[in-house]
Length: 461
Ligand SMILES: Cc1ncc(COP(=O)(O)O)c(C=O)c1O
Image (cartoon, rainbow, N blue to C red; front, side, top):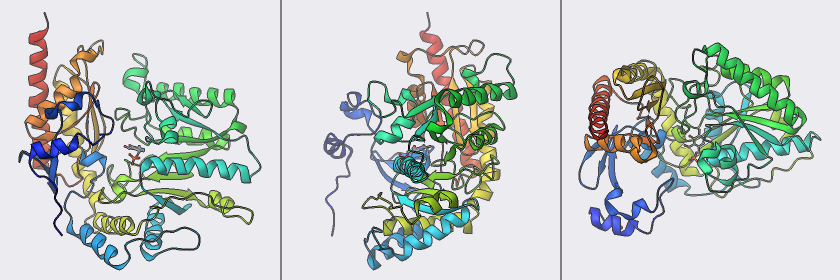
């Protein structure tokens, strides 16, 4: 069967006027040239409908870890669909791909995390974690222990509940379910939140105090969990001070609060490890939520991986697990997950990232010599560049300048897709970059930033 899908830019964009994009200025997108149609992808590159080859500097959306077009994953999905296209894991049903992936994922997660719930997005993985924690506390006879600690700058997803966990800036003028349920702690964003001259260790004390003060105010008996990304992604690639996660973990344990690590981005090799909580940040959370790189984006899949302690309670004799989505543990998504993890392991992609990711990180840090680059932060293939109009005072460009968007456009003209976020540009490419491609990205960024800075200087009276 041949599907009648348009290939020309005009035809695509005419059909596309019916599509609602995500996190978009929908009004601005009514101008047809505001949109880019991606029509193909191979390796670390994508092709747009005009035939331009672009480096995928954002890995689809922090997710295409093994690169585009891997036939092993595509074949595994096809074979699975031919054998068993769909069956649910509701009630007493299961199927081999879900069972095998559950075994594989829990074998890679920290030792005490041995049970996993598969769904189809990071948002739902986080929603699932909240529902599980609430149910856990009901079963433990603690019906008040329901509130959640999150952080300013966090991004945990876009369902009603996941958005409530997310930083309030992401729901400006929108309602959320946060009221009374979620308390946002201070952001570990030292560049903007730390006082001048403050050391990392001192800033960590400020953040720890904020957490203990909040727990005291809300009452540990009312708090179910603390949600935290090991490195905040969509909040602007915010790296917490050294020792932060270990310290926060200790505080949560002192108060019988569950630690939920949102590893939607930081798992599956992006930082050089399959999971980063224990391997990089030195602590074992009670729950890990992950998605994205678990299939490298070839199929929608997420995982909420829980500790034996939580599982023992929610699977107890008086418990009933009233949670489920039709597409949870979808056979094709589980097959994609298995094939993707096999590639990550067989090719030791996390091990390679330890070297190439560091080269990428260092290359981008070198851009600090440009006057409008205020901060370069992140780790391995998860990097953010923050732009300022004055490096000394860290003054930002005005909203009208829209520096991130200007720079993203300048990069795209030169063959690189980067993601704008206000005054920040995010780079989270596929994990298969070689040194040449890394230097190509650095070169495009440098030229684009220098050109844009010169243009802005010329416009200043
Ligand atoms: C850390 C983190 N958590 C959760 C999510 C939400 O995942 P999804 O978009 O698959 O719902 C994202 C998405 O970018 C994320 O970066």
